[in-house]
Length: 211
Image 1 (tube, rainbow, N blue to C red):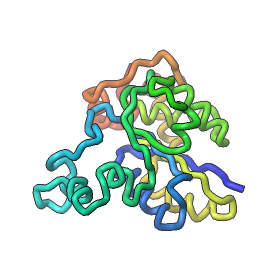
Image 2 (image 1 turned 45 degrees about the vertical axis):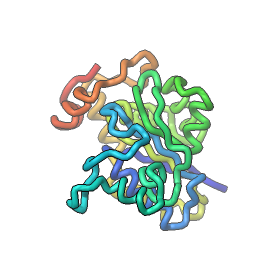
Image 3 (image 1 turned 90 degrees about the vertical axis):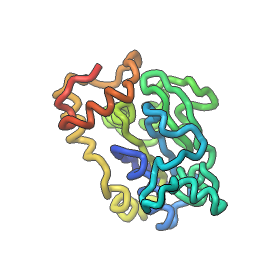
């Protein structure tokens, strides 16, 4: 029997590290799903120069990985093709995202323009409460990255410990959103611009009212 663990991260790189960690712990890529905001258009499926240069050598780390034979999609997914099929799509209510994995298939099907409500529904079917699912989707709308993993029930505690590292406290974030005027999932909500997301992150989370 498998159970679903879902976590929200404030940026893609943190979520990618979580993917790499659960893979190293033995979880197959087919049981991992990721949906990340692409409001700033940072990912278009092509290598970019000096976008992620952690080793300071002036070359995009993802390009280096691709040149080593990993392939840009696999590198962005976290390594050895964990999230095969990573791609760009536009989701009403969320805006542009990069996404791949079982949650995407369940929530969006083959239609790139499916509503964010499909993701909420897929999460609830996987055992996430509707209230929490709405917070996860709002987190992506505000520039975050959603990661869901299906794990053996007997290994749940082990994988939760891995995924909890650097994950957002979903309950604190929910209260912050509410204080900012958010009342729950709104299928008619407008996607945020990259500028609005940067403003939200520049202030204390939840202290600025967003549309």
